[in-house]
Length: 193
Image 1 (tube, helix red, strand yellow):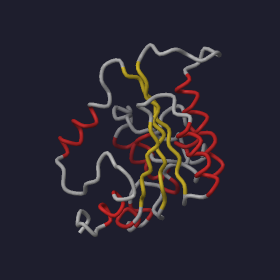
Image 2 (cartoon, one colour):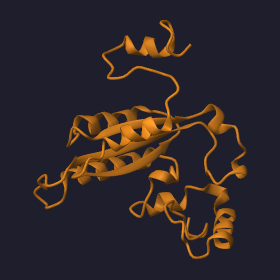
Image 3 (cartoon, one colour):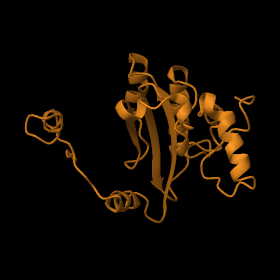
């Protein structure tokens, strides 16, 4: 099916020279080990995301420019498509704030520790990341994918859970009033959104 000679993976692979072109089951431990290899000691990094309804000419222009201006060979732009099973649950059935088909654009800036800063004293890698993130904002949906959001993006955090925010905060208050679990950012309330 997916890996068949006339299937979608091989069809796409014939368009260029992919680094990897496979579909199949993979143990979670294998995936985590591959990810660990991206973050050796001394490598620095930051991630920002934007959620879009679809790819438009304006978005393609922003991403093409960003790809032309990568500041490190470790940086990347990754697209995650949310459709099919991810869109089937009712919006109010989970904390996830978006159930219609959409794309999440993940901007990854990674560099070796100790690399020079630009003429302003700021990391050129972070400048690339923030400028690309800002350039996508006018074309983006509110909120974002919370696993990749942090204190740098409070506007996105405030809008990530949509109409589920107050219910989620009530559960958090009842189950974890001391905020022992804090890896996933939460807004203060929907009034802040």
